[in-house]
Length: 406
Image (tube, rainbow, N blue to C red; front, side):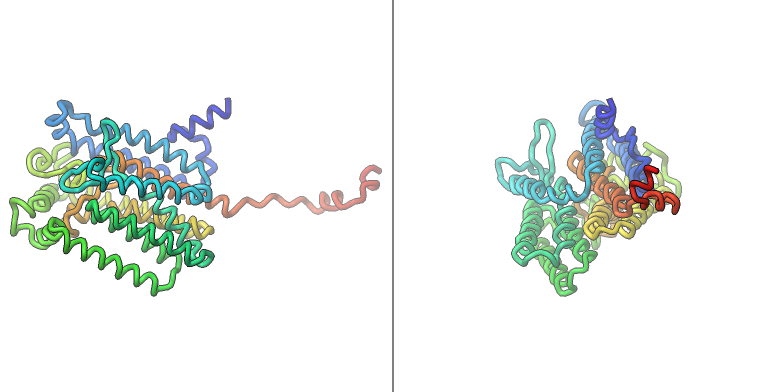
């Protein structure tokens, strides 16, 4: 009966009976993740309701599909938090190569699905999966494994995995998906920096990444147009600058306190892709400057706890997993906010656990689970000391057997 109960806790994370044994950081991150998820579903409900009524005939379509993917993600979440990081690190390479194969399949004309000029998806029955999103948690694990063990690996192993990383980023660029490629490359770069790799390698990698981004922008006309429209969206308000202008109008309409939950006007008529890339604009219009500030405080709190985990855990690879996971979750959230607010060029990058998308939801919950698991490793890194016996007990234990029998 106890075994059945334990198996159920691996599927239903809300009723996990082992949580009381976790470190304080792990418990905090667990509940902050659940809060993030619940909050994201509410925002998605508001942002997608009108579009869902128009396209699907009822307002709950996108939220219900998102909840289905969230259920799958939570089951994976609980499985990961109950699996030692060392085991996850050992198996990450195989899974990463498999997902890399799926990324390559998106480039096959007969298999890849093109949406808005980018071929990033593969059909999965009535749904579509985005392999470039799914590989992010595996990329964190394998990056931590490679750079955390850099000094103990041969140059053959180093170059082999570096080649795999470059091929993955290159394949994502070919889809084309500059934003995801930039997130993946930046995450690996920060993990390498945190691992203490020589600065000449770090600098060379940074220059190579900038060169690749420059070449991509030079070749892809639409990427170049996005940068130009980002610099001056009002130069072409009806076409290239339309998305950013409507996003800025939505954010500005929120004022100090916002229009109220569900009362955004821009999402009804003008704001494009309001339940994915520009979902923050809907949130800012409904909750205003105060709500946006609270969201940034929440992200800062999440990042602070994650950094505490990286400081407290003693295993070098576990530190790198915590840093990489935090970079994916918080960094990508800030990038999405930056795009919606006009700080960064317009690009298709989802807000983790908020934007609509099954692949993004599963990848985000798996990445959060890696962070929680790293926090759980704090207790294993600092095992509790057994109580020492008293002096009289020590004397009794040291007596000869014959003396004890007397």
